[in-house]
Length: 336
Image (cartoon, rainbow, N blue to C red; front, side, top):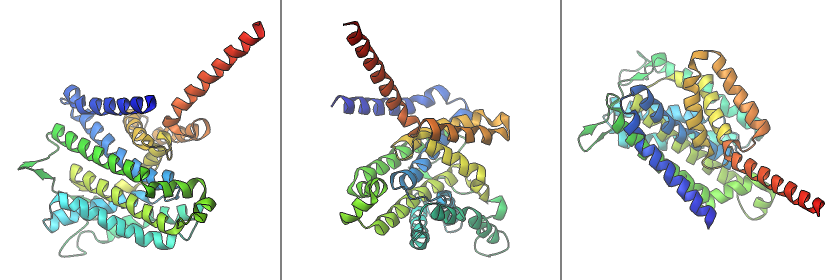
């Protein structure tokens, strides 16, 4: 009961802090932009952790669904006049369908073979995007290597969100973050999420209990792809731009660091990792090419010393506290 009170108190306190941040930083466009990126990448990282950490499916093509969602929403809004709000849903559905199509053959593979095949999407998708660039079609264009520009922003009650006024966009991103994180939380705590964790922790036993491994892995592929697609669509409407440059190895590694540094498979570690790494990435920009080296060291340090990432820090302090108590107990016994 006490642990639950502490957990909910920490959650409420964190949400209050996030809600009042614009009061301190509203004058700085740079800081507000970073805070919005923290919220967007927090959802993206948590959706990747759902398949990689919770279900332990080694999918390394998750960023592809993010880009697919951005392009689907952008093309639908720009060339078909679809509302961005409907575009978010459409982007998630298309990403989920493509996730299922890719997952059906890929999930026959295991471990690193699955990781390599899904990672190949990072190289195939940019080629497809560039192919459907300017001059290829009379009805629409992906913008080629320059990206799809002038994507319409969402409108609510007659107000159009724009990057000239970042405080309203921040609160829209904040609501998006809360809703997405709540959905992921309920998925993890649902019977479906329990099945994911059962297959991760005790696959032979889970199978004997009637859990269909292939079906549930396909399901987590679709769910995580849907969330990533919606996040990519929101990202596209925020910047009013989506391009193949969002699929570079740099971006892939940064998002992967977010997931691992926050705590693989430990909710909401990936989202916390996203906040830390997004801010750290901005602070490390002056180091240029050394930035990725430093972030790579983050991964090595985390995997060796903190298997649960930032979410494992309380366990470390608890173990140190218990060790100190045992040492005190031993000393008192020796004195007696």
